[in-house]
Amino acid sequence: MAADPIGRTHVPGFGEPYRGKVRDVYPLADRRLGIVSSDRISAFDHVLRQLIPYKGQVLNSLAAFMFDRVSDLIETHIISVPHPNLTIAKSCRGLPVEVVVRGYLSGHAARVYGAGGRLLCGVDLPDGLSEHQRLPSPILTPTTKASEGHDEDITEAEILSRGLVDAGLWADVKRVAFALFDRGTEIASERGLILVDTKYEFGLHEGRLVLMDEVHTPDSSRYVEAEGYAEAMARGSKPRQLSKEFVREWLIEHGFMGKEGQIMPDFPPEFVSRISQRYIELYERLTGTDFVPASTADFDSRCAVWFEEALRDRP
Image (cartoon, rainbow, N blue to C red; front, side, top):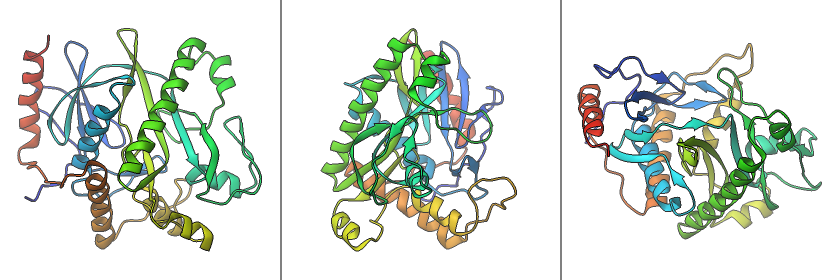
């Protein structure tokens, strides 16, 4: 079944949503949210012009799968998933930092390291590491949550000294983040993958710490194939990735890292198709199930019905 890509939604009767990079968020009554995962794609804190077919369905469905797999570690924001593009969620007051846990030297960390940096978010990195190499132990590298522009690295000491998060709450966040990374590593290993690094977002709902946004998805995480990883490292080549990192690498090769004065390139059609297939492949690998697209016909009008049903079903 073909599904029309979802760009910007306009759900009748529910006003203008908050539009994040890839999600449209509708405030509902009773401290609930209607969260639409669109087919927009972002990189380097910019939303690219092309829509990626099925990306929203993959992202939302995989997040729901992963939220369920970690729900014994922390309360999650999920209430229900009426459609693969839609989640009804608890409204949380998000903490003003994002928590990145890294098990390998990849992505932003590798770029900092390659430029000579050995201190990342207050964490000392040893000399002699290679890109994609496993770190001696996972590290936590938080970032600020910028309303505009780029998120920026921040240290634990800065978070506490600036009062961004209370010390007791931050201790809980750290403990849960490492436990989540261990669980994500286990899930990936079951499927022949390596969880390289990942981002977690936490919030408070009625005073309780809650995991929100997404978890262990290709937008928030990097995965590589376990098979062939050691051989690739020995050859000095890149292990095969099943994440969005290859999109960032394509943009870098075409002169774009979101910096001032750089021109955002357009993806050619064949690359759009490749991105879509990579998302679907990762979904099927991690869930062990086939991806079956759902119809997006009359999606905005159907969302209004689902929102009303969610409000009628509230406890």
